Image (cartoon, rainbow, N blue to C red):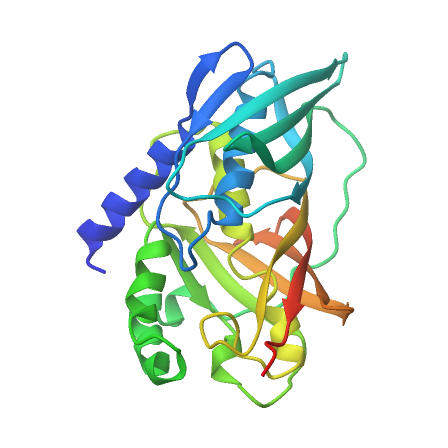
Length: 297
């Protein structure tokens, strides 16, 4: 995609996260194209966090979310987000959000927000990773894998679906090691495809939430030499998603997404990850379980 296309895609994503408020605790959002004919999980999680954050005092930022994907979302229909103001304490605020389409809940999120406080501070060291500028862009790397995908149009659809994000693999993607099980670990660098005018912590947190669902189960596939949904040697979907926001981040600056999978069993795979700022601060911890099934003959 050209730079102007990426700029338009980022503008569209920001519009997507700017939910329409239709009642005091009720918001409405739309969807954007996805690689598969359903609402992208990262989108509904990010929109639900936007809805929750819009009801929280401005001196509090999100520190955790826990969510479940209940039903497949319809990308052609609006999504209504209803916020339940569970608790407003002196330090913490808790919100519950239910996303509804066609009269049925498709997603459930609980999020907690906290006032800024001083406290004990430590973290593990940031893992080694190549500099993001030395890595090929998606537009440069994806065409080399075109023949592996079931549909020759997958490359263009992937580039369109991820056009708002500059996402670069630091390790081999699952479709690059088909048939060869490797260490279940994956690294990508990401940032928005353009600078953001806003310094609103909620926006940057929600953008990180959006991206966090793009590659988290890659490490499960790597452990079994599977290429993924686009290749067609597995089928699956996200089941639940949890995030802990430790330190501030900017989504328009390079972030390292270091991911691994400790286990898969029973048609489910577990991915866990950490998001690091480029200067080595641990910003986010992410855990997700998803359905990962081998298609029947």
